[in-house]
Length: 279
Image 1 (cartoon, helix red, strand yellow):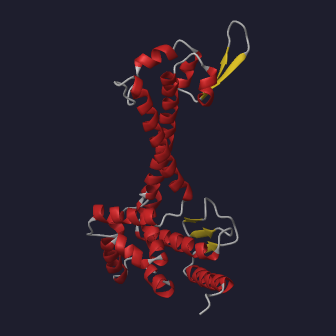
Image 2 (image 1 turned 90 degrees about the vertical axis):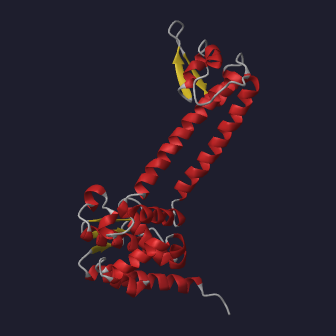
Image 3 (image 1 turned 180 degrees about the horizontal axis):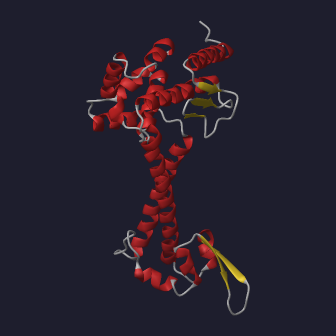
């Protein structure tokens, strides 16, 4: 048997997407599909959903499911616009900590944010570099600890302009007496300060790597805080159910059972009909 033609698959996605849009509009929701969409691929605000015109129909379906779930959530939980909602309103009498952990695991498993994954990879690479540099320094200074300032090395550094590189990766220093400026960089510390021993220069590079790690970790934490918002956890869970229900049930068996129970009890309003029609 020949595999299905890709153009036919695209047409099927397009048909399903248009039917979904028609259904959501029948509920009185404004759905815009011809703009780039504010934010990234889509957004929901009050009674309006925008889906980016720059993504494929398969992704448009997933984004519409996500934003429609926000719409349903907003009708159930008045806190969604202020505190990003709460899971208790969606899953009353459930074990919320357990449920939250499972929903977050689903979010991570189905995450499409390549930048987020790259950040984790960068973090691991920088951590590896930090350990390697620390090991080199410890060969000469066994009592060295990277978690705190090391005065034996900083003493020599602070006698030169290299002291600025303990805080900054790149600096421009103006000469107060003779005029002119000098540019220094962690990347060129070897040539900029040939008089410093290798362990001392490694210490400067280490401080730079630690600053890089801190920036990466801060960005990861901001994304994690966003992903852990109840509104995002719920919307990504429903989106994931459409993509691969079996995988969701394996990752989040408890959340799936509670969700199905509440769906049957019509807690999620038109979301039940939406799922019956399109999932």
